[in-house]
Length: 397
Length: 191
Image 1: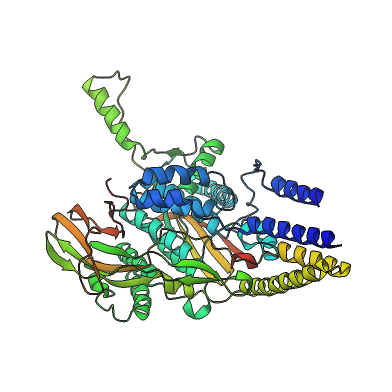
Image 2: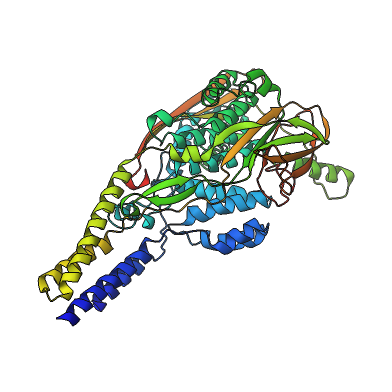
């Protein structure tokens, strides 16, 4: 009888192990992250392309990583391709079968489409590319999409994406739609009331360079709650708190905050899916406890307890409650913004990051040359990296 | 137990096999969202062409009018190839009403300029010289939308409007529209 009880426990453990394999959320391979951080963007892109081409449930995860990688390596064609490929799935209703199954089994088996803030950020990057290429209709559409993505959040937080409103306003102004620009700026100002000068309509209208400065590393998606069934977003630590923009060695601008992605991630609110996940988590924990207690009884020779242990164990194994923690790894935590009108001519810009004590953070400077012409209007996206990158998205390599 | 696990594994593997099917261009994708689809492109273009061919300035013209494109304005919230509709309309018109109108190819005008210059300089052969045609009409359009999203629910109203404008007088000779409203709801798992 003891042998029989042992066999039952062994089987339960096997099923648990199997279940754990199925429950694993896909992560970007560490080698890709290492290559990305070591400025080996082509190497990172090669692996990501292969994985994205598989067209499986994780395609969007890899396409978003590819979007970031190609943006750093100034491969604008690849950037546009990965943006479009990711958007197509993120905004579709694809994967109903896997999605429904994920409610009963592991959440990570569903097609990854990103959180509202991830969808919004993809649209922001895509919009910047179109803006700098002069495709203003597409830029406006992309910035509008970033705001639509936020409408998936709980009702009181749906209009808090100031970055989307700001960039939409600038695009409206370039398209001659002053009324809508004013409305969009008003909404941005509600989120960041201190940014009055940034949200001034006339100032934004006359500006021909916009600096977006990325700060920190995006929030970390972690499991929490009963049976690890829910998600919580943790702000990562990083040394820089602000930045100063220099022009020809002279301080030019002090950009102000316009985006906080940790706050965005946390403000989604509870959904029906969270309720299902919680129920799964609670029942899984109960089933696991039952299986362990019953297995103990079975080992003492109680045959009924053996069957109970088996049933509870199978239920716990099938009911994979662990939350899906797939996430876009290469996002910043915050973004700062500044806009200015510059007379035509040659400029050398430098962005210097500073820490809490306003001390320079060496090694993180970004420096680039740019020629302002009579009709130029450019958004620079300055990444937080120790690598030398081109902040002129869509511009020359 | 081993057998059960093997069957379970096999079932999962079968579900992972990739597949692709050829479907008609006028069908909506099974995973479709609320945005413009190939079905919209086909339906809109066909309707517009039917409507345009009823215009007396075209159907009763003694000399085929010359038509040039002017960029379509995309005011929707989706990123799309905005000239796809008028290009599809041109194809349908040329296929079904050849000789009733002439389309001017302004897309390759720089190539044409170079070729003309080469011909006139004698660096390439030339059979005859012609004056470049001017447009009698401009065909253009505007795509607009109203999008609403609330939680997992989304609706998109899209209006596809096209017009033919006299290239001399700016008179709008013809305009027609097609409206579509699509609603979608994300599954519980996608919220």
